[in-house]
Image (cartoon, rainbow, N blue to C red; front, side, top):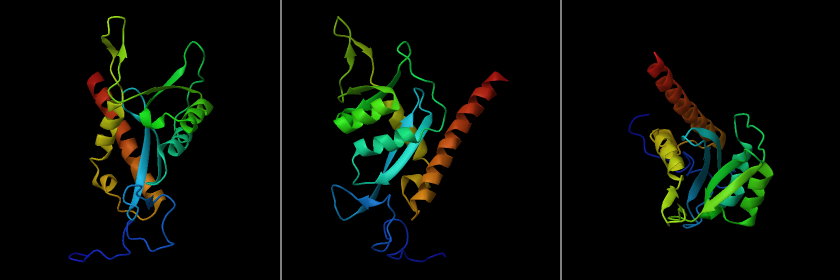
Length: 181
């Protein structure tokens, strides 16, 4: 309806007390605001592989196990010759995260922000790869419905995120097939 004001019970942030979704929680810094935390697992080129959401007051380490369980493609079995690596930032440097990574069969690589791998001459050999995830979030947040959560149900919001991820994969596939012809 055009020209209608926002009512206190509309949308995710205005859910009535007791009717809130399990994936909307208090923001840990403001304590009174509702919020949602999104976790994303991407491949080396930035293609989304797994996505999970939870309340904003859930620590990242608890959300990591949900994200690793949400992988939508069949993973090859890791072998000693070909281990599967998982690059994480310093926020995941705790026993809970390490257990989740080991249970999923990954080798964790956790670096501090600004820390790079150096060779014998103290020169950078491999730059940090966290920007790949940030770039994917930028692509996803170009959809207005993802940037600001308008859906009250977390299942609807998660479905919208997954549709946006599928759209990213379709765009990548279309670009590749367009170049071949």
